[in-house]
Length: 194
Image (cartoon, rainbow, N blue to C red; front, side, top):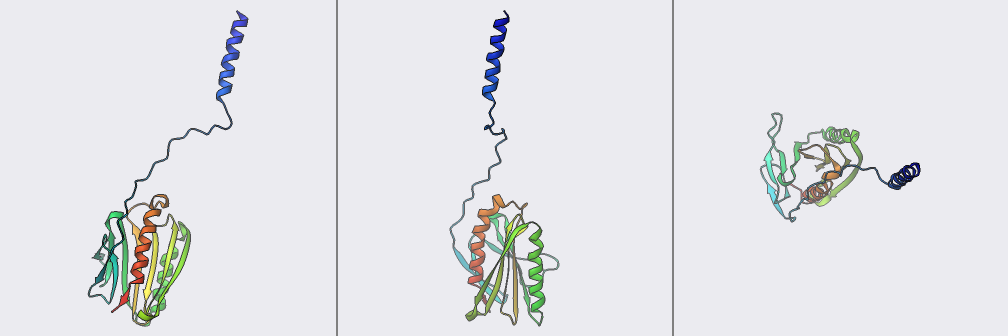
């Protein structure tokens, strides 16, 4: 009888020992998946209004006047409804205060450094149209992924900032940010002062 119990205990011990391995991963729940995003085909149309500029915008976006109580004329919001995001555009005439506008733009982009994993700057210059600018590409879980300014250095200044209407999560937003960056670069490349 003793031998029988010893054999049973030994067999059960070997079974448990066989189930334990240092190579086994800890069992964890499967991470949440993200929705598949269908990107529309890139097509553009000209935006021209009473404001002193014009540019091409994607056909899947639309422009609204900024409804903020402090909004000035030619402050616009380019809505990307399929992506729940907005490109805020703020126009200011220059009257000896270009340095202040440039400093304000830098300060507003730099505020995102707390959450950003990096900020890359990209210069833009089109001498024939007198369009000069700088794009801040903000990486990481910052509230704004792209900010920029465009100026002619004499009369006009336009600032832009892309925001999503959700909590920033670079893992889920990265494909959309990449897609919308192309549209922002296209806006800058087709931008003209009137």
